[in-house]
Image (cartoon, rainbow, N blue to C red; front, side, top):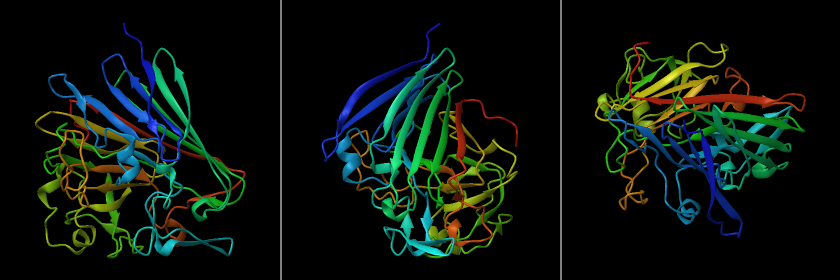
Length: 360
């Protein structure tokens, strides 16, 4: 039986002249996950359709130059803080910190040079049942405005069940805030010229976080019942995305964080996506309290896709497991504080198959 493998090649050089390597993780079924050390980006990820045909299902680019030029975080690791922090300010122990305001008045996804734009150190691990790429990065004290030297490790692990796990660890020498995620855009048709509106989404959440017109949560936990935000039974993304609804207007569609059920119970099933033509089925498991579901609203046809076309509106969706946006400024949200005596731990598993479960 073929064993799992990991291959390495040079993907390119950054503008600063640093080498960027690409690692291709392959299991014995034929799934391939390609990851580069720039941003820890998943550049391609193949999954089977109902005929067993493995094709790439994530948005991205073919060259490093394109990733460095402009990207809406395609496939990247996000940190130190994923999502938004209002006005780029937060307090720890009565000291106010000011971050880069790179999203209108707010701070988004770690700033101008977040974890998605740095070159990570890499180590490979291969055994009989899994293959892993361990990425490491030291974010220095006050980088992008964050206090503390943050030692971060993210491990991508592929097994023979077509599961990719993403494990995050971090330690600090000063009190700080941490909220890491993975920002892949999925299109389970494997045709990046098609939109994702027919994908059926399930989210295990009874409430979501409404936002203002700058996409900052208001602090309310709003019941999803009888709203377009109710995905407790699978429904197509496009079914209610154009409904008259202030929250949909604020996000130009879905760009919100759901408050996941069964918090504090460790890793559990939190979301899924099913594409009925190909039969591809994605399940997400995580120990995080929230998930940001984004329907690709800001894709506008200006960015090149992998097929010599462009990424049109809503040709990809994201399911980003994370803590809540703007948590440092919301006392009723779960804490994102990390102290020197603690270790940040988070894990998310993406399982791909062609057999939708009946767990709903």
